[in-house]
Image (cartoon, rainbow, N blue to C red; front, side):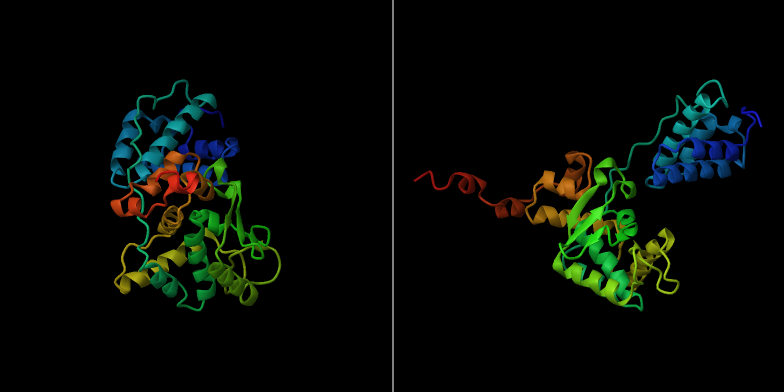
Amino acid sequence: MPRSPQSSLADATQSFRISRHDLKFKTLRTYVGSLGRFDSWVGKGSVADLTADNANSYIASVIDHRFMARNDGRALKLFSKWLVRAGYISTDPLISVSVPKTPKWRPKPFAPEVVPVILEASGDSRTGARDRAIVALSMATGARPQEIHQLRWPQDVDLVNGLVMIREETSKTESGHRKVPIPPQVIALLHEYIDRYRSPGPGPLWLHFRTRRALKEAGFMAIHHRLRDYLRRQGIQGYQAYRNRHTGITDMVKAGLSTLVTMQLAGHKSPVVTQHYVGKLSDSDLRSLPDWFTKSHGRVLN
């Protein structure tokens, strides 16, 4: 069928998905999801329905969602430019559409006294050996949830040397390719899961306990959702998978790692992003800093 403004949005989205093979799989899936939501909103329309008025109205309809309005707005503008290049339309109808700014919000780290409670609760089920290893590894390395989910055994996990390899293709940015040390406590949890519960042989690290197949993303996130609900019943609010990452990065800073080292371990593209996690130092933090002058120069003043 010839490409024109009368082509369905669904068909155009499918062509966009096939042609943009240069994008990472997860990024492309996110864009396609955004376009699908817009298509449902206009009532399974055509390319001609991608107008500035419709785009602005759609963005306004989801503005209460923290990141959806921005992400969907970006996807629509990217798609609109592609439609011109692909020959569906002659001019970009969304050139005047503004995308909402990223909300200045980040999940807070867990308080130190809450961490043991979370780890104890994560192991309180028949799949506890796997689930506790997932949560502990997330907190200890500060890795993103999708990076933890897509680890493979044995190439990504070196229990002998205590290292985990995060691959670029599973990460958010090109800076995501990195090695992160694993503390002995977490090595022990991983060893127990792998030795006692995981099927032998290489492949995805996390397996479904019943089918022994790779744990899909929905199943991986369901672990965190169950833990959230369990903790809520215990009076602990606000558990989120991404807070494990924030906790890990914050712990790196508290342990005295420099911003540049923390940036590398976290897989950040810029130290500016790392600074969002570091935050402002309190008076107590300042008083606890080492005496770098004396450490560098010794006792040079009497």
